[in-house]
Amino acid sequence: MRYNSLCFTVIISVLLLCISYCGVYAQESESVERDLTLEEMLEKAEEKIEQMDESSAIELYESILEDEPENLEALWNLSILYAKEGFRYDDESEMISYYEKAKELADTALENYPDEANAHFAYAVVIGRISDISSPRERIRAADDIRHHVEKAIKLDPDHKFAWHVLGVWHMNAANLSRAERWAANLLLGGAPEGASNSEAEEALKRAIELDETNILFQLDLAKFYKLTDRENEAKEVLERLVELEPKYQDDPDYIEEGRVLLQEIS
Image (cartoon, rainbow, N blue to C red; front, side):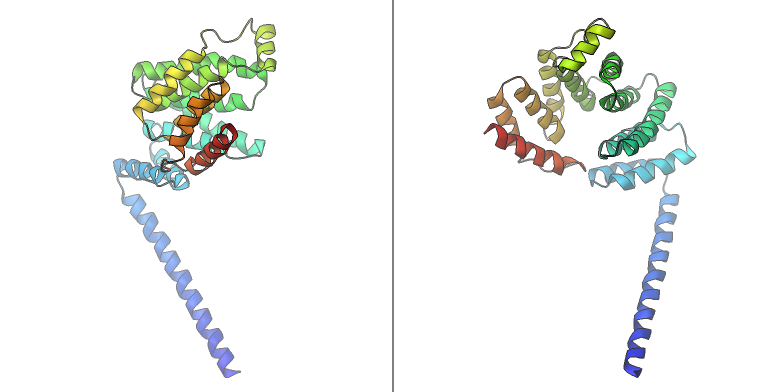
């Protein structure tokens, strides 16, 4: 009995020590974060994204916006991260919740920084995500808005790799509308989005890859484009390169797996 009592006492002591240590560690972490300058917090958030720790990046950007509600870097980055987080949910209500927060931030960025490429880019991404879960009519209506803002981003920053990627995906989707979407476009809006073409899609996607050859999502969407347009040999070449790339962002392992599955389908 004395032995059991002693063990119990030791266990309780260890647990209390661990709890105390965790509390001190958390307080120290919060203190360090508070002591960081704005630039250091922005740099740390970017590092977290590169370390595939987007939840920590979100917390940092949220903290920045508490002190500086109109900070451009925090606004557009957090808007994109909210949009990405929402896209990961299967539950539509959760998805919408994140998209609404992303849209609010994108609106603020665009209102305060109308001549900044990243403000237009974030806005295009967010309304694109919202249109994904909207009716065919709403998707068609959003198409011109998405194109306008992503092209504006490229005009302001011709080397904006992410904007080139979004433009490529826009052309790919708009040039290959589903039957329901084409019907809605003809009936309600007088036709599909003008100027959409597969040649523009390929050019934009290749430009994005030219700016960042190791971006896995860029490669995956180019492969999807080739498959969609019955160019499976070219899709296979892209996918064979893709599966050898190292993940850089949080969703990259999933994109690599998606690429492997697609490669098996066409091999």
